Image (cartoon, rainbow, N blue to C red; front, top):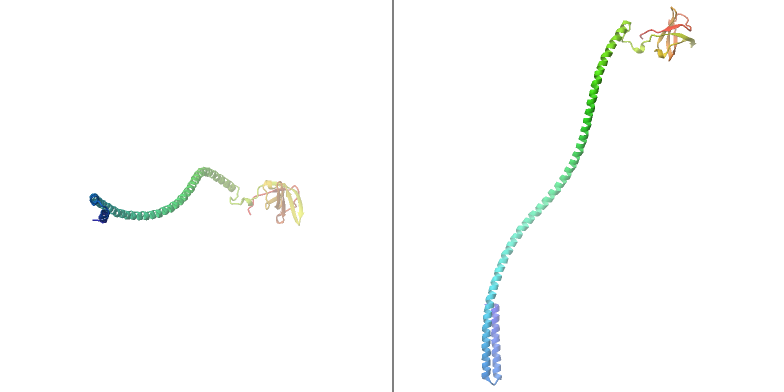
Length: 279
């Protein structure tokens, strides 16, 4: 019997004692003891019936309470089992969560590393693109240079062919000129600057300057005379001397008579002529 049953029993006992005391008090104060006794008996019967009902109700309540307690204990056991299962599940979830957090940290580090690598690769790609553009530009320039060089090569080949033909012509002409010079007893190795052109003229004026006799002649630079050339002076068949050209103008020149070659007085109207001389 649990606490509730004991409480009900004690309550019934107390109620019975009170009822009995009440009955005695009524009986002692009432003159009609039989009626009072009958009333009390009736009350006792009712109390007994009520007590029986209450006992039955108590037993029913105890049975119900026992069932409720058993149900509650089953629920508690079930809840305890579920709690244990939830604890295990929570532990498993916590372990998975820890793994996921570790994986997240690893993935975060991998993402950061990947991002850095992507940035580095992006920079390398940009550099490679710039290098490719430069190489393409250099290639285009090289192709253009190659095409231009090929055209220039073809032109050069054409010029070389023309120059070969021209060289052959010049070689032939040189051979003819050398043969002509040798036929005229002229050394082909003579410096052209040292050769005096073959020209004729006359003395147009004479004068003296610082003890030297100067003559002006009617031929000049347009005829091929240059400073340093020499001319021979004669009158008819008579040789008069030699003069060195010291100044030239387009149509006249001035010469200084060389004393060691002078063999007569040189005058206006005398003839002058040049000849080829080496040295």
